[in-house]
Image 1 (cartoon, rainbow, N blue to C red):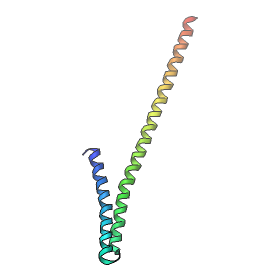
Image 2 (cartoon, rainbow, N blue to C red; image 1 turned 180 degrees about the horizontal axis):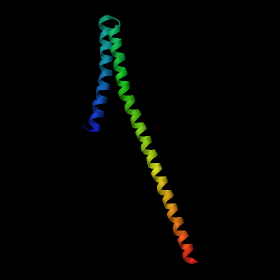
Image 3 (cartoon, rainbow, N blue to C red; image 1 turned 90 degrees about the vertical axis):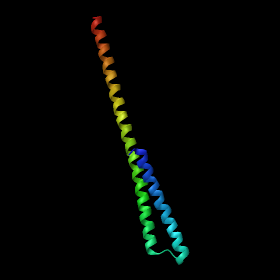
Image 4 (cartoon, one colour; image 1 turned 180 degrees about the vertical axis):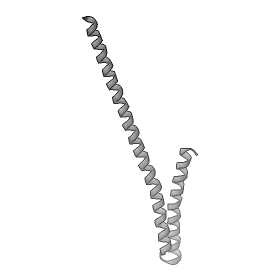
Length: 99
């Protein structure tokens, strides 16, 4: 299963849970005149599930992005230090040849 398909399934089920909780709450209110305890529990579970899906996904994407950025910075610094060392060795070799 590709990453896009997996994310699409996660986001659509989280959205469906929120919508179903809202619809169930409205139906319960209009039929009974108040929202029953079971409906409130279902709505809380729907919000918890959706929050978990959206929050965890965003958290991991952010952390992955930070890790990639740190790795790229580390690689860039290493290449720059290697280039400086090579230039220093070349200049040292030129000085030795001039003598």
